Image 1 (cartoon, rainbow, N blue to C red):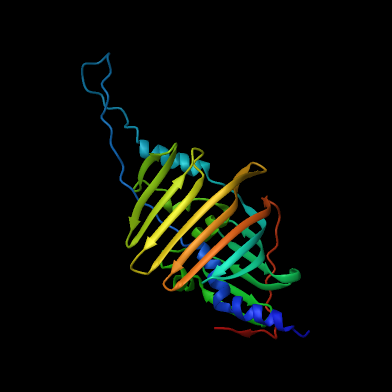
Image 2: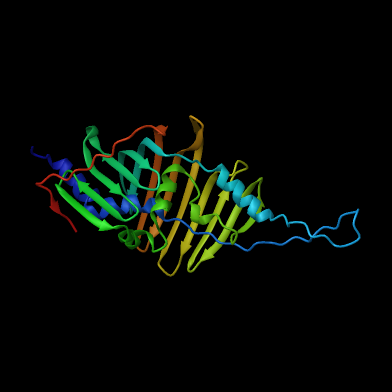
Length: 279
C-alpha cells in the first residue's frame, strides 16, 4: 500500500522510534517518597500507679495507609483517550487506546488522522517494544532505556500509576514529610537529586505532582482532574502533563472518553517480517 505525503510527514515528525518512546515515557517521570516517623508518649492508666506503656499511635503511618486505601486497585484496565501532544511547540492530536495488566504489561495503540494506526507499544517491567506502522520500523529496548528521556528514578510501576491517576507504591512510606493543606494533604521530600511535591484532595486522590531534578535538567508537573466513577473505581478522566527534559519541552493533555476495569483483555503485538529495526 502506498503512503500519501501527509502521512509520511506526520510519521517523520512524530513517530520515529525515539519519539514514540519518549511520548510514552514522559508519562512516567514520577517520584519516590520517604519520611521520618514520629513517636508519641506512652500513657499511664488511672487504675495503676506504675507506668504502663501502650502502643504508640503512629499518625504518619495511619495517613500513609489511608492514602494507600484511596488508590485504585485493579487487575486489568482498558481506556480510550483523546490526546493533544506538543513537542517544543509543535502540536498534534492523536487517539490512544491503552490496556494494562497490573504489574505485568502496558499496551498502547496510537491512531492519528482518519483512525489510521501509526504506532503500537508494549511495555513490561523489563522491556519496551515499539512499532512504527507508517515506516515499518520497530524498536526493542530494555526498560532502562527510558532514563534517557525520563531520568534514572523511573520504573514500570510509576508509568502504570500515571495512566490510572494513582500515587506510585514506592512513594508511600514513612519517610515523607506530610502536612495538611487547604483541606487536603501534601507530601514532600527528596530522593538523591529528585525533589518532589505531591498534593492530594480531601479524598486522598492525587491532584498534582511536581518533580524537579536540577542535576539531570528535568522538571515535570502532572495535574489530574474531572474525577469519574467507573464501576467501583474512581480515577481522573483528564491528565495534563508538562515536562522539560534538558532542551525538550513536552506538553500532553490526555482526556479519557472510555474506561473499563477488570475485563478480559488481549494484548496483540506481532512484528511483521518486513519490519526493520530502528534506532
